[in-house]
Image (cartoon, rainbow, N blue to C red; front, top):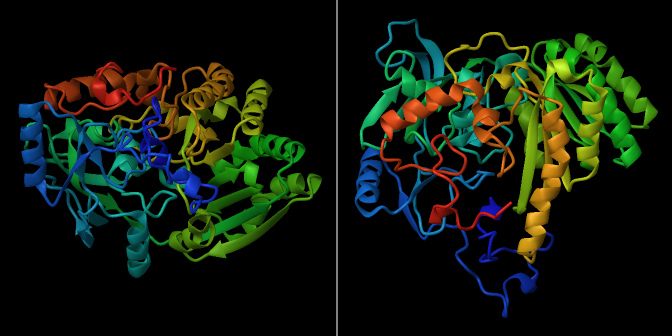
Length: 480
């Protein structure tokens, strides 16, 4: 992420003007191009031996390590000044396995994909189309499916009915900080498997490979909304969406609400076309009030839906930004004070978004087998308030950006006691992060961390076992 190419605390950076990438003011004298938070040294990981050697080197020299897959880390865990980066992007093996059995298990085989850590969603969706199956994945084509996405939980537009990514991962091959290549699944190294299923990336080891359940191809009903994003229209529509979202989640709808751009896209893999339109009748009524429009359609598969509605919305240029977020449980949608606070946050930040990805309708999860906060299991919305800055922002402006989001999110936090935030998409300075990200799972995760990494070779910002901001590797973080 471009905000972590920057040393946010002192303006060392080499950024382009995201509003006009050819603007010479961003890169011509007197501006100086600096290293920022980008590690000065990388190892292009080609296999487990490279990781083992890196751990031995770091243990001897005390050079800090970071793990970088595709670099889509909003919290800066894959960047650190002066660090050695272990780059897993080029681990590209990929196979369709008709009958996958996890190592050491005596269970019936299931259909699966086995992939190197660097495989990204675009290739996985293409393979799913080739074999007429559904791979549950995220919203960015260039995210690596075995990295932070899955290790932090992994949400999707299909999550309301199919669960999180951690509910479908079957096995990891991972090099732990003692240099050992280990297999982790429900039968072997079960504690490590638990930790890798939501305990956060960059913490327990370097994942080399993972295997994921794939299921038969689904037809996806769609509801594509456009409206003029005035403040009055945003307020009216968000209140209508909130009034119906619990029922819609029960009906199988998931998707992405981007109020500042006047756009909403919903997907449903369980209803037929007639039932989908009937389910969304309240949406049609709400849009009439603001002169908006909804188009219903049918996509023959999830990759087809993704290609038409999600991939086309990818940002063409990196934007330096920060966010604050909260998971909104189903039981809170009748709290008008909370809905007002969510609307207020959407109207007073640079980029608001609500991801309707909570797996509240998915009942096939292993209650004790994943490390994500239990708040995920009862949530409907993942609410995001983000602020954007540019290449010429000052330290004071960046600090104010974080502080304004904290001010917007604090009422939402206060009105959702016992909930939490998604570790991969959260405030960099998330309060009480241990409870927010993992809830009652944190003590168990900390014990697993101490078992596999007793020397604390892997340390990252607000991760399990985080040593604190005083370490020099965090000198580019702001004091908030």
